[in-house]
Length: 295
View (cartoon, rainbow, N blue to C red):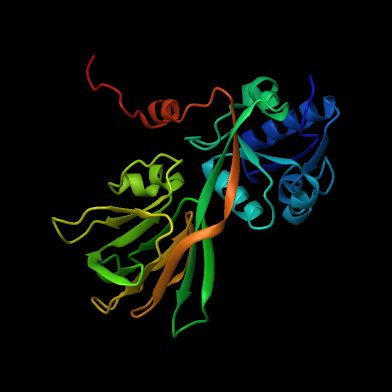
C-alpha cells in the first residue's frame, strides 16, 4: 500500500470516550503503516498525553499534509474553519457524532475507505466560508468567519425584532422576525433547513437568507450570488438585544443600529471524500430526503 499523505494530523473532540477510543485505534493504525502522526494538543491532553503533548493547529498547518477529524459535524466545522485560516491543508472526517453529514467515514472503515483516501483515491471539493464584520457604537468592530452559517437570533427576551437588509448597496427589504440565518451551501442542511430554507448543492456559489419565524405570511428565503455584499442593521422595534453566532458559537449581543456586513471569505475549506462518496446518498441516508412516506 503506497500512501501519498505521509504526515498526518489527528484532531478529535475532547470529552467523548468514543472519540478517544477511535483516536487511539487510528493512531496505532497509522503508525503501523510508518506514517508520521501529529496529534492535536487538546486531543492529546484528553488522552492523558499517552502519545505526547501534541501539536498546535499552527504547527499542524506547517508540518502536515492532511488532517483527519474524529468526531461530529461540529468538530469538523471548527477544525476546518480554524485550519483554513492559516493553511490550505485538506481535511477528512471520521464520524463519531450523531448525524455525520460532513464526517462521512465510519470508524470501522479506517483501514478501507480512509486508507484509500490517504493513498490518493479520493474526491476533493472546496467549501467557501462567510466572513462578517460587526460595527457598533457600543464595542469595537469585530470580525468572524463561518463555514456553516451566521445567525442573528432573538436574545433572552425571545421577542420579534426588526432588521433592515441591504444587498450590494441597495435597499432590499425589512424583516420583522425572531432572527435571520445567513447560510452557505454547506450550512443549508443545518439550522437553515430546520427554519424552512432550501437544500443547496455544495457546488453552488450561493448564499441563502432564511428568516426565522417571520411576522409575515409572504416572507420567504432568498438565495443570492455568493459574491453578494449583504448588510443587516438591527432596528429599534422592541428595543432588541439579539445574539450573533457563527457555526453555533455565540459571538456577541447586538443592539439597535448595530450593523453586520457579510461577504464571501477569501479562504475556503478543502474537504476530501472517498471515491464512492455521493452527496445525494448522504441526503437520503442522513436526512431521509426523497423517501416515500408509504410503500
